[in-house]
Image (cartoon, rainbow, N blue to C red; front, side, top):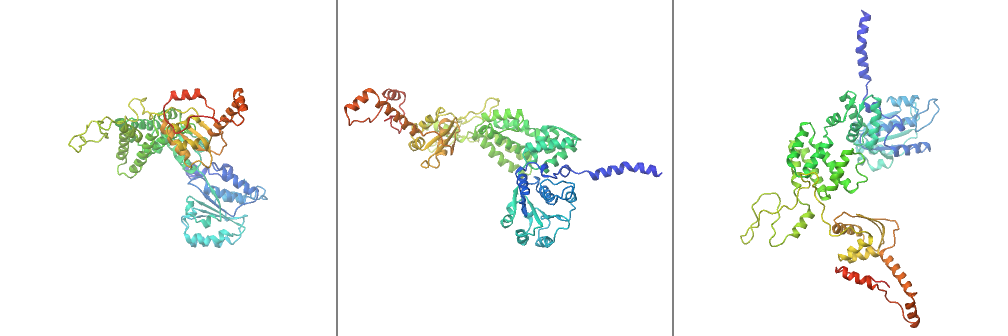
Length: 593
């Protein structure tokens, strides 16, 4: 009977023991040494040097977003300060052994000399007074008594004031480690008494690699794309990412694909998000609403879909302006489709889409029926696809004849505009612009027409300012600017102090207007080449020296001792210039002395 009871009770006891022994991934894989701490290289390097040189501060202030390792770092510091090594003779070290009694006790949260205090629940001056009273006593068994105060910004003003004197001159056997997510709420008087470390968000690629290693140790099969989604949702927080990874492994029973993670996070397929964006840009309301309904049926959160659209709009803008540095973490299909859209959509269109989506996100989050608000945002985008950009509107209105051109109007109703004499303007005006994207995939909105061809070099670019009667800018560019770098759409200049402060912005704006291409003009400290005026002066000097040695000129100068060369003119070049163009400029004809 007793043997049968024992055999019957064993599986149940083992199951209960396993259930109690299980720890979530965020606790199971919490770093115990600085070598295991990911994404905080600056912190580790500084503390390593401090321990090596025995320059360990008496108080540390760790700040950063949730889940980046503030409390973990505080505990590692406590172990590093109190480690005595396997043989019991070691001193403070950046690499605690993990086997000595202080290391094991601190890791198990049972060391009497390492006191953790949650300032979120103990905010008053009485709680701090208890801490101050304990500071006076030497540690019971450790080398240092370490006080770890989490969420220190939650302390009251009186509590901070009570702590100041002790924090400024603590006993030599005491160390403080503070952690906070709201560094701005900590008084400056406290910050000035601490050595501050800002823990950064962990990069997505680092998180993906870290999660892949943990999944392998947990014997879980997870797609790389699914890990990328988890890392992106973690937003730089290791703890948040591990919690999501734990949930994904449980959801997929050890085998997780990207569809399961999307469903878990309430995300839409990126390809569907791009389809939705394209539908709105070409003004296809029916397609946009159909995609919206399919996403709603699949359980996608409207706010999350709008955030995905915002993220994709931001990606397109970066691909358009800095194609070499954007889209490093994208899939091949997403990169190709994004690149094609970035090439076809202009900056005003992308900027307007961003503004509409950003405003719509707030509306969806506050609306009683988020799906209806989401569809209204999409319809607003579709309607905006039929509207011209401000530049197109001004250009088309300027080109219209003042006397008989139809009055421009939007898509709203109204039969016409009644004039003062009783006449009525023509109601059926031609549309001012086509949708941003037509129904055909290749029919994208064209960029504004250029007034000038792209200048081939720096001198040609400067000549445009003379052509358009920008005499002051033309003078400064020729005299007070030295070219460092020139390429299509980008100019880098070294300017002299005499140049106006807004030279770069004015030059970039005018070149963009004249050429129809965005120009980026930057100021550099590099020496650059000689200015155009210096080059012209050198050319004139060389021509003068060449003229002096010419036999005819030399003979004339010898015959008339008081004579001098006043001007050297290339008559053939002047004749060609006069016949080639009649555009007036504010500059004199090119000449050299």
